[in-house]
Image (cartoon, rainbow, N blue to C red; front, side):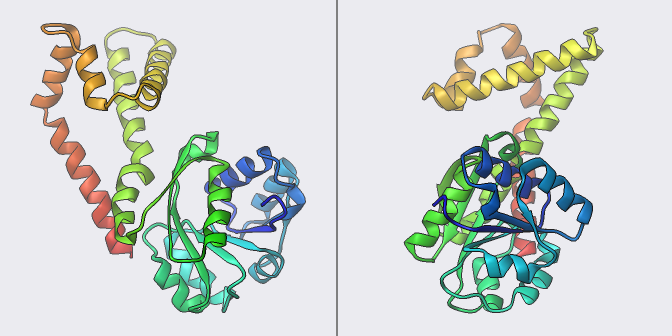
Length: 265
């Protein structure tokens, strides 16, 4: 896999996260190419990672075994039109939210090997969660797995329709945790804590709780119960959250994200 030539169309934050993961994992920088509408952005990526930068999409496509479409959903049709037909030997990975693999194949050709992925921003620190779907052959799935696993965990789904739920839970999910952290930090300050201390308390608590959730083998429900002493401070806080209808707010938020994903499709 390390001999693959990997091309990125779009050089934004998610593309950079994947490039950083690949190069840190030992993939040769000279085998990575990127193009972007911003020359300044290309200069930053080349300077930071030593990768090749290209003037246009056609140049990247011609030199790549794997093409990663790292553009916004609103830009995907323009990119696909510029790409034109793509041979069956190339692997095309799309991280454009809401855009189906079928939609991409309609433009690139029925033989195109398309892998649709929903990553999330923790890829930036090597702790991403990327969910993949494809009807392409095994070699193309293995290539996509290789690219995404360099920046975190991966999972596969067999029904592409589940990608809307994936987008709502993990794709948009980091923002939910950031909002909770933001609110907790502000509440700590309102209670008299210095800002830097409140931020440290919340950040480390979030990190520790996340590790317990992913490493303990226990469910979120059980972990919550174990930290909630009857009549204690945690129970008082949780009761206030339930009275404020936090569970309904979370369910409604995730449903809204899934609905928007379907609208983009």
